[in-house]
Amino acid sequence: MPEYPTFQHGTSRFDQGTFFGRFRHFLDVIDPSTLFTTEKQLQESVELLARFKQGTLPPGVTDAQLWQAQKIKQAIIHPDTGEKILMPFRMSGFIPFGTPVVVGLLLPNQTLASTVFWQWLNQSHNACVNYSNRNASKPAPASKFIQGYLGAVTSAVSIAVGLNVFLQKASRFSPATRLLVQRFIPFPAVATANVCNVVLMRHWELAEGINVLDGDGNVVATSRVAARHALFETALTRVVLPMPILVLPPVIMAALEKLPLLQRRRRLVLPVHSLVCLAAFGLALPLAISLFPQMSQIGVKQLEPEIAMATDCQIVTYNKGL
Image 1 (cartoon, helix red, strand yellow):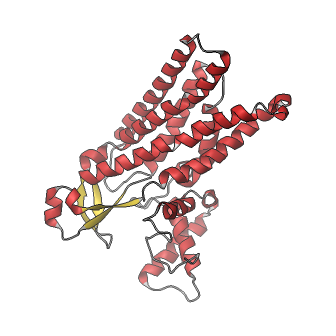
Image 2: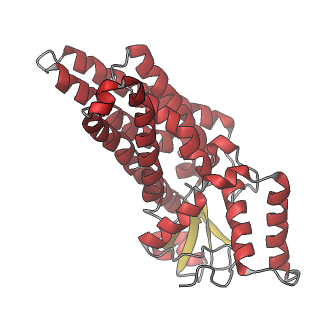
């Protein structure tokens, strides 16, 4: 496969039918270099894609330039609303803006106050990312966002605090075991809260449904069944996402802290910890969101009977969200 195949508007240059193709696609989606795109570069990219659709491309424009323009637009502009996503809440900003929070979540010997603070900060960031990258084919009131946000934060803090209280009462654990268990506490708290976050932030989709599209991108109908599929797929990625981030760093750091260098120079522990978290985050995010394509397909027979009766399409597409 050539590096830059013939450009096709609205599709990926990688095969979305395979996990590896989706992985390569989402490496483009989360590429933090797009955070430095200027307003002029964004407008040029949008205009270039518009001229491609109109068939009025200037001579000399290459496939590589068109793929790059689409990469920039997809990283910054929401596919449903057509509006710019705020930088900290783009998928390309998830790792740079989320890593400091992950480091905070994994700090050992946390107090009750620090546990509450880091869980609150993490779920606040996740809520904004979930909302900003949702399927927005149907409008939703701000009150739904507020309800979802409060529910996600409450669930995360409650689980984390409950596990910490349990650990403090488990006096039979040795100090070393207590420290190790405490380092793993963020995972069940974050994984459960991540699912609650997605469901609560996007639960109106279950009632209102989301648009399903034909092969030409035209809206066929609004489907609640497709909404359930979209929500389930997104929630599953949020369970997988924190696994490498919250499980690998404690294991790696437990080994590294035994090294003579870190034994002698304790000030290096936090910088090393931060680098380990960054590496785990950089691996986990594309792996998790590559489980399913963003534009997922579903057979019409799986949808509501009235939709199947009203269209000749066999397969329709919906935006799963990220």
